[in-house]
Amino acid sequence: MTIFASAALRTTALATTLAGGLLGVATHAADPISPVGLVQVVRDDFEFTEGPAYDPDSKTLYFSDIPANKIYALDAKGEVSVFLDPSNHTNGIVSRRGGESKGKLFACQMDGQIVAYDTKTKATEVLADQYDGERFNAPNDLVVDRDGGVYFTDPLFRAPQPLPQEIQAVYYRAADGNVTRVTGAIAAPNGVALSPDGKRLYVVPSMQAEMLAYPVTGPGKLGDEAVLCKLVQPEGKSGTGGDGMVVDVEGNLYITSQLGVQIFSATGEYRGIVQTPQVPANVTFGDEDGKTMYITARTGLYKVRMPIAGLTPN
Image 1 (cartoon, rainbow, N blue to C red):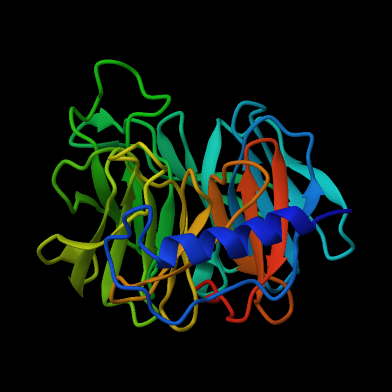
Image 2: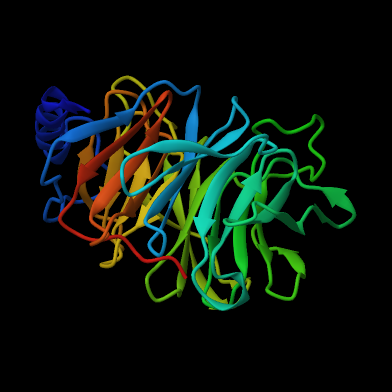
């Protein structure tokens, strides 16, 4: 296992620069959140990794490799195996722990649907494959609420042209199977997450720097859109968005970007950044105490210890 001391040192240096406002932080700096260990590579021979999801019951991390059309599993011994091949270009994945879905993985297949995988039999159940009589564009990422409903993003990446849904938006698949569109058009909605109390939905657009938040007034019911924060931009660029996202038990958001995993408080204050050797795509927390942050970044899977635990899946 390779340890990236240089990456950790760059993280500290960049965090200091960002907090000083030299790259145009759009929010006030709050108390910093920094790794308590060095960034480590778990394995680095994939094509393009995405969708990490940790199952606390089996102590297994699942993640996707979109071009390879596979889902991999990292077990508690650190061994990586193929969980599913082919995967219909699975992207985002979440582990299910409660209700009838216990022991399943909910996932976005970019080929046009959201599904549930049985982790024991690998059987696939289609949860939703169309809205208003048309297939989805290319479902990207998802989060499950306490009612068993699924919020999922549907941008343009790998989608047919013209877009089947005409716009890029967020949808909600209720536990009874009913599907509704819950937002208007968004500039490539990508990562999505809920606050710890389930009362706010966060959405990461990939084609704008402004990250979005919506009050949740009921299952699949959202209030008015608001800008939560603005991502720190690469020097000389503007309008660069994010990709994946995860929330910790204190409500902080960890958003993958071109600069690394940017961290913001629930009120939009900048709290730090974690860099990886490659540009990160998505992120989750795992291991016994929930404080290991797993990061999928291009051809690699990385991990780093953090001071705050991530939210446990519903």
